[in-house]
Length: 220
Image (cartoon, rainbow, N blue to C red; front, side, top):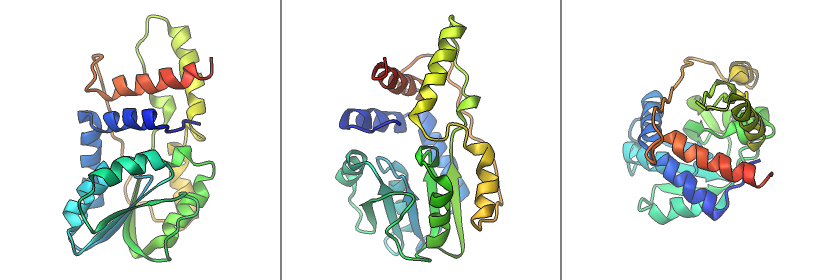
């Protein structure tokens, strides 16, 4: 599994700042359709960029809680936070330290594929939402990631080895069933494509390639 050391956390923060992921967050916000005064929880908030944008929308009469299992990522988020109604908490997606029916909205982006028991995490997410609450969940199906390479066999080996960085590299095709099983009603299903045609530091693929290299180097 991918571990977020301080160095890895800094790299991840850089990836989250690329135009590709900025656009992805904008899409997530559109789907969330937040209004002032709502309470929102971000499960697996990472460095907190989405939390900050959600806090701007719900305003001081609302509330945003970011939860993450990485202390390094939470440190980045807390260092930037200037809003009293935005707070962060160390926690496990499978056992949220939050009361039942506490939030209007929940969001989880690129998190569940790293959780060994995603059904338990989804069930806990459902538990903390108020009746009529809503959630947006985003995950990557790593079978759908295409890389150009002059050595196709080597690239295939790299992709297979990279799958070990998460617990469920093919989670999205099973999400609809999992959501319904824990009590959610699926109202929308869509995709967010990222296409990079050049190797540049301001692209998602550039940052991801760096994470892959570091991950594989640790495994010879």
